[in-house]
Amino acid sequence: MRNKILLSVLLLSSVIFMTSLSDNGNAGQILTQKPVNHLIKGGCKGSPTYPEPDSIIITVSGHNVTVLHVDAFYNCCYQITTEVVQVGNVINLHEHTSGTPCFCMCYFNLTTTVYDLQPGTYTINVYNADDQYVGGGTVTIRGVKPTDQPLLE
Image (tube, rainbow, N blue to C red; front, top):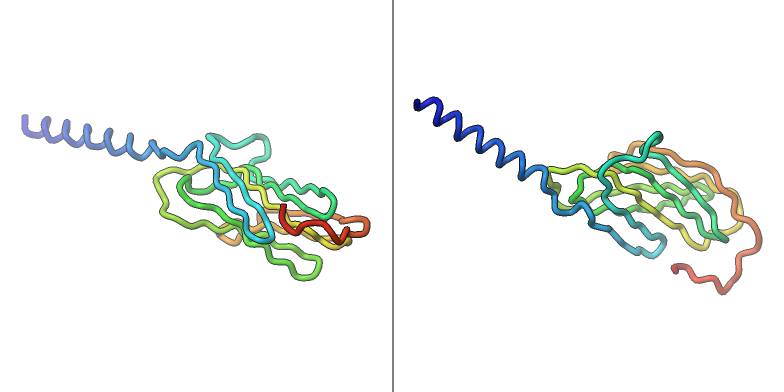
């Protein structure tokens, strides 16, 4: 009888613990930060976009380059930022996490825009928070840069 009571208490405790792990409370949270040279946004999603999770999409608009990291996999409770490091015509985007982790992992779509680039061809590299290369590509900025273009929209 004593073993049955102990087993029941352990089973109930396990169910309560597992329920608390699955409730992250941040599933719809949107992270936004506007540093001087870029903008990042992301929303926690329930599942990856198939068939190619964790992919990089790069677009050019005028003298601005926008990089979308689709299905970045991070802890749901982390704040995610991107550091942009430009050396000549190579632009490296390094994702960083901060904050207190919780018992939840999420897929995020992270967008970083680099503004006001000079005309030329650029190599874009994206690295996750573990400093692993995720992907990238090459883009060309055409035309003469207007002098009155803002640095940050």
